[in-house]
Length: 436
Image 1: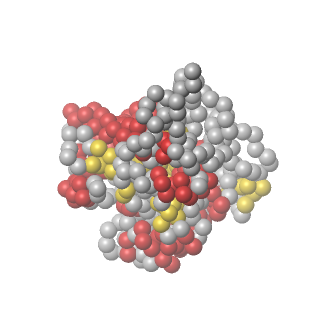
Image 2: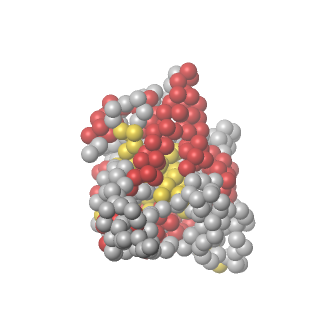
Image 3: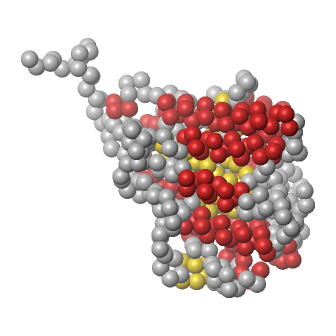
């Protein structure tokens, strides 16, 4: 796969995750075992309420106030964001599901634009982790000064002007539809020899500053000065990330906290309610059942692929459909045990890639369609989930974290989250006498 994306179609963004060989990933997964503002009522009809993010055309914006060279602009509050509300005593938590994309960009596959449509059709918003070098043309590559590497180096290449124009268009529409634009940083360096796992806090800060700079100066770097700006202030918009290959998290979190981030999604968790770590919400991906195996699997397309075909090259075509079904069914099993159990948010990570014939893209789309229209389910961005968590009573969140994977309260939600135990139903021991 070429390091630099060219204007000739089809263009494919380079893979943005490399965690380990399949056996290593399996061992890690085994060792780790221990909303879709759909706003629908019990009948499945759309329910009124301020939490529901309405699909459709973006809301009218005020005249933009250009920032810097006009690559970005302040246009007012982001449209279609649900208003976070504190749960009432005894209220059953909604089931949140987050679909997120590493290294988001639009290329010849047009997967960014496709999944925007999928989200809109299913009452969902998502998080797009943009790689900053996808906003930097190849002929300006030396503007990138990666930590511990020579200028102009990137393990995922750079972009061309058409690719940048296409990506800007998708970012613009995505934000206006209520989706979040996070970051996957820049050069995607993994492993030793200057990989992100070796970076200091100050080097992470520099990488974040550069990721922001490429987004805030794409017009200057491409010469497309007459193009419409991105409709947000990226310094304020950027509140979270996922590190390349899930490496370097310790020092990244320290840097991110100092730079105003609110969450991180770079770890591996069980399906439990989130907690804050070093001041940031830990919204890491999770382990879910892996059909046909005794160990669980990380909720990411790359990890399913590694444990199935073992390579980013196309595996056995006769197994493509089975592999996609296996990922879909594993994610749905994880969803069901949360939905019927502790209601912990389900965090899913993906790439805009056509590995094994695109079977993982099909799987993700089928999961979106299967879960995002269910009652009490909210398919949201990380920003929206963090907003909701911040609005809750910390004592309630602490109590939710006492529930194990798939564990529903034995006495029911009303009693579990009520300040006073709910009365026993009529006709059972301990219930009030029925008046004659």
